[in-house]
Length: 598
Image: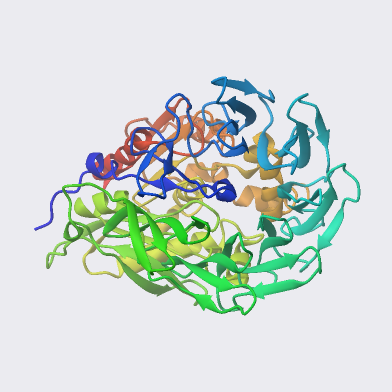
């Protein structure tokens, strides 16, 4: 007999974030909510214990940090209540004092790297309209712009040769990202690698000495990793045209490459021998989205979960081929209390096969159940075979839940992902409609009680389904920080998001009809089902205006709050739902809404 699965209890299962910057040292760091809203912790490799990083220093997973001087000075990104307008702070441990190095409340300054002599910080900032690279003199706070692209520059690594390598959008195709370089004095800024006219090529890291660059690309159709040798200019490709892999890290001795291999419902680490390209796959269960080498490359450090096992933080000893748990969830629940989903395929409108994760309750013969369609964030997001507390709680309350891997989803290659180009809110939206049709084909689903929900891009898709595609017959919908008009989002958005939108639709002047046709705000009069709207006030991506204008139009149409719609604004929060309290609040609001209306 399963126990009742309560969100209040499941939200206490910890989650863990290992940030990409952490691999600069053998010490292990992670963010978690195990002792309250996202704190940083350090792991002792002697006895595998962990403790809070620093009692008086507040750090969360939205605050990336870099050591300037080990155990003496720390560089930190901080924003204001989730608005993502990051400034750079320096914390001096000897003086127990934090100093603000930049102060630009309307612009961001993201940490990228530190110069070899520790005198400068490489940052990515949009203070001069679009994202470019700058170097900041730590002592004088003097800022020097190094790149001058009209479209965003992304990331950047500073090598011991005082050459900075980075990714940039610098062609007419807004969805083409190439590899560029610039000297640390701003000279010799030029394109280094152009792998394709239509590929996403990202600098993801470097070897410790800066000789090898780790690059992630989809130039050959699949997501692959390649290593570029800055001395010989040679490229080494890993994976193949049927694999989907994301580069994580080059080992300190430059002999191994760590990647994450993505499959439909699983992601897991793979280690390549850089010279022979022979691969080794550690026997680790569940889904692992990020990993890193640790302890002089002896260990892998990661968190994993599966639908019936909440997040586990662990090390994998590569010399002994055994896992060493660091943090295991403590709960009254056992594995058998949780539901195991299925992975199914259904045929969509153009005869493509779409994969989907399906959770269902313990079915009683002859009984009809309400159902929910989860639209993840993105575009590109997908539900995998990991632990999802909302799904477990909803299914325990008697809902069937499906989350399809619609066109545009990651993990299926470039061709499938690019199907949404210039068709956002078209074919992908119809894939969701056909997931509803699949639910209706199940004898135990009540076709008159089917809802859709999601956040960010999933919130957009919820708005769109209940308006433009209202004739699909949705019975309720819940949108969290969603998009209601591409034009108003563009006008209020940060430069990087403006470029992203134009990459999907073209410019407004060129494709005004498409922009407007795919904006839910233009179809509010078609809405028939009750809708829940939740919006964070400080969200810089899907801004507060997106939800307010949709609510105001509902009121103009004489829709009644509490009957036709429910609307909530959340102060002091941004796009990301951070911490147990915030996650519980949002999940409860959505589940209670569907309990009420379905």
